[in-house]
Length: 404
Image (cartoon, rainbow, N blue to C red; front, side):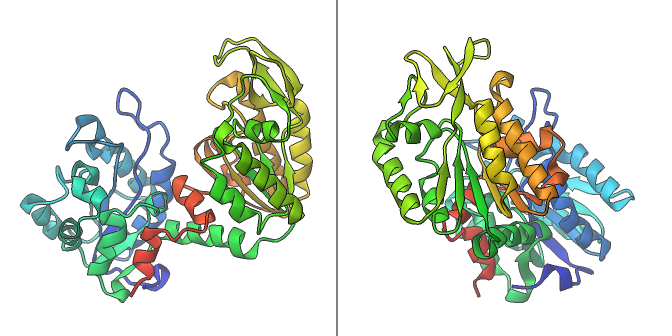
């Protein structure tokens, strides 16, 4: 694997696997361009050194070939605008209506130094998700150098992330700046966490987070559990949770995790109180009550004010913080306060000197909504990839670059 920072891209056609899988509204306007902005440093270094960039990405989940709303043509103007701003000059960006075939080859060959070619959605071909070797090889012929800068897809064994790298020599394949930062930040948590180390794990289901919880039992001093998954643990401890979300088939696993934590002297913190509702709706009636005394017909949809204070104390005394997952139904304003309060606490702890890594959709959304992205140590672009990394799994996109 080559070092991105030491590589000279002059006169090189550089294939960059970016993660431009951004949300679009009904008018095809980007509603969150975080992922595109995160890739700019890698792209601009290639262009500034006199190379050209061929960008490859997914957008959405098309099932059977091309779908107009998932075309990357919708990103041409905003990507070009962001590149122009990053380069402080006009950058020529060409769009290819496909990602394979003769026309694409000709556009790649005609690409001049300092120019950018954006290929059409790779997912328009089923060969991408199946990791097809011929498809990967065809993509590889378009450039001289391969860069994987899409951490958000590193856990997928796709042609553009896990197979393409084999068609490049060690000195011509590498991670981009974003991927380097993602891996370094995750490794700082996994291998060099300064204690006390608190992991804040939220979300709806215990089943989605079992492996990460078990792996963190060996590394964290404290684990805060919020969101819907907290009620499975509360019920496992004998609490009354009313109609709150609960995976009854995971109660024994929850008990096992609680017992392992106790045996390892890891403190597991469940919310003392909850904001409960009489229905899952934005206009529901609500009240604040102890989390283990939720009456029948009511459900916990956010952590309560005592829990916010309880969790804040744990966070502020920590030197390392990992946050993945919301504390409540963040998309409903009435049940978003717990997640926002955690965001504020993480930002305050970071200001006091803690290292904080935030990953996962709603956690990142809360940080961005409050304008705290620059008040935490690192905001990850990878949801599923980050989870699997912390579960101890080998990510195909990382292994492909590292392999000889």
